Length: 182
Ligand code: AMP
Ligand code: ZN
Image 1: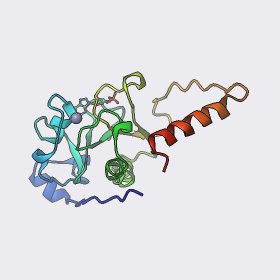
Image 2: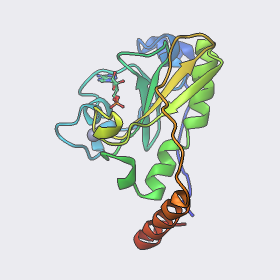
Image 3: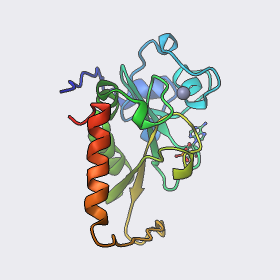
C-alpha cells in the first residue's frame, strides 16, 4: 500500500503579502527548491514548477504544486499537478499519485472557503481525446455554485445485455496483467 508523505507548511497572509502574493493565492504556499526537479524541457507546467514561467501559486509541497488556472471557469479554478513530469495519470506509480493527491481534500476545502463556492468539480482530462491540452498531469478544481451556468455534456448511455459483465471481466483481466490490481 502506498504511503503518502508530504511536507506542507501554511503561510500567513502577511508572509505571502511580503512576497507579493495576495488573495486566494496566499492561502497555502511553501516553496521547496524547485529547480532540482526533473522536467520535460518543453513542458509548460514543468516550467511553471521550475519558476521559469510565472504562476499564481496556492500550494507547494515536496511533490505537488497548485496554481490558479489562467483562464478560469470560475474564480478560484485551480490546477493541482505533480512536480515530476508525467503526461497522463496511468503513467504514475501509486506512491507518486498518492503524494500528489494527498493535499487535494484540503485544497478543495480552501478553494470553497476562499470563493464561497458550495461545491467543486474535480476534473482530470487524461489524454488528448479526453480534452487534455497541456500534456502534464493535472487536476482541475472548479468551484461550483447553483445556477452558475457551467454544465457538462453528459450523454449517458445504457449497456446492452451482458455487455457490462464483459467489460468488467476485460478491465479485471487488464488489471491482473499489469499487476496494478491492488
Ligand atoms: P486541459 O485542457 O485539461 O489540458 O487544461 C489545461 C488548463 O491549463 C486550461 O484550463 C488552461 O487554461 C490552463 N493553462 C494553460 N496555460 C496556463 C498557465 N500559463 N497558467 C495557468 N493555467 C494555464
Ligand atoms: Zn511537465
